[in-house]
Length: 312
Image 1 (cartoon, one colour):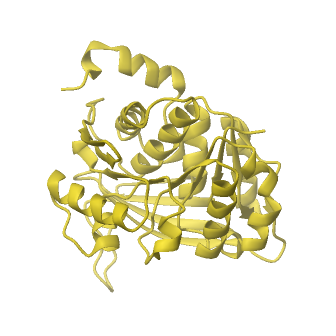
Image 2 (tube, rainbow, N blue to C red):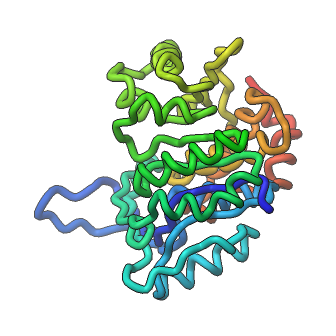
């Protein structure tokens, strides 16, 4: 059985590098291209496994070349695939990613493909795997009903639950109350609360609003500023680390969530788990890609123990 179980989608990332996005009707020459594994759930499962957790992934994929990429990627990373559903009638997901050559920032369009058919019934079928885990993680790229049911199953079993509310969507209080940890970025926190989130204090106010709606602990990821953890008895910004020049921020949030889940499964305190996640995210942005950029446990441990990686 797995200690960390992740529900989400897999998509092949088609990443284009350019100084800016083209205007409608404009053709713009790129400065780089790569194709690789992606999808937030898959990225998070890979990040958790590479960080040291026994990890299983729950999703649907097609019967095509992109599915072959998925299976090889998970096998190479040590992610369990026994519960993966192969869908003969739908293609495996894909994503367009723009990466700015000026800043490393990104913009994404994702088509979930077969994973868009993940259902609450599928979640019921996965009950034994979810219920036997220590930490369950999901996001919002697959249908919300499936995420809702899986979170309910985890809560009943006493499993720690993490919801990464991305891409941004409207969430009701019942769904939020199923989340022991909610991990929005600044834009997602703003969308969920209707509040502007530009500063740490803004993030704290938004986090308290979300706690008032039933979330256990809110962790607002703040990019280069690290992450704010706001929950019962704690409200603290955990600083980011400087691991080198920023190359690509595409997989930073997924690296954080996967490593954070791994650390919680090991019994670390939430604050220490956030610090572990920040280290993994800081390493990931120095490398191109998403899943491929996530750090190994040896890399994270070495980075955290080095003099240059101490908290400022």
